[in-house]
Length: 446
Image (cartoon, rainbow, N blue to C red; front, side):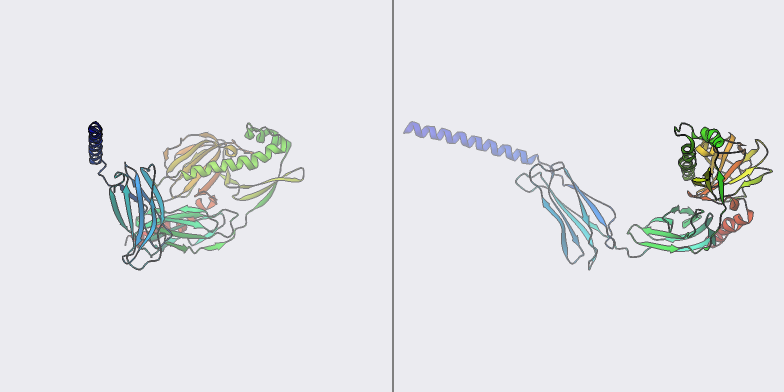
């Protein structure tokens, strides 16, 4: 019995030593645990009066064990999200939280998180509070000056004021969804925009839309004197010599034959060529906005107008309609190889070959206004070059889909071809641009 008792004592002593060592090791491990609180990030400005969501992110090297998000109005608290995580903990968690829109007092978002550093005991906790703004006021809009008329195929200029402590976006939008950039002008809170109506858009309307960061939106309908312009319609007989000559040259690598080749050039290639023009128009800069002014466009000396803007052609082959198309510029005939001049300062945004337009130059003049010169025999400018009035940009020619030597002159305003004759008319420029700017400056700078 004595020996057995001694053995039991030895066993108990060993167990005690092991327990002491284990306990000591556990205590040492606890001393080395993470002492830092989890970090909390709440993305997005928070507004209680709109359909608004917040992204709450919790991070910790030991992982996130608990996450709770509450809404408080100073009187009551509502739990919006609560979860306890088990198993292997994520070191970063993000949740989307919908902000309540009904409350009584001062709204606030409260985020509480617990990390996994404590093992079976409590870890590090953190509590973050973020106030929620209440913004019930929409931006104010006031038109300062504007063009008073717009017809299909023309453009108009509007200068206005949009104010809000939290102003976010300002733009002008047509009733067809076309968006026109509103550019800061003269002073803070003032904007200017050119709007444009396509030749076929006989019911054009436009509104200024201003939105603040809280989601409040104001819409101001611009009042225009409107009239429908009638444009010329014509029939064009397509012949085999035309298809085998100019059309084949312009079609390039297109493998179709006969009428398919003509339809490709007149429809698909025409559409692709116009898209290149719109891309060039969209590359305009604000370099000429502050002191914006336009002189009359007069690109070629001693000219005769040979084709009008917005002529709608029906193309007929052997008595049968095969295609249609719009002529979206004005054609000028002149002396052979006549020089083509820059009329207004701008930046060359395209200089090269472009489908049906052949050798083409596009110059951006500010506010989304671009002048376009097509069918050139020679180009004397390069993309990115700043040009001034009086410089020679090239020479007229017969490149692209052209049946004779001439200049195809076009004006594009914020992605829409408009009537070039307006911009070659000093009275139109005076009434719709110069007078509008002068009237705005009198009010803004007084």
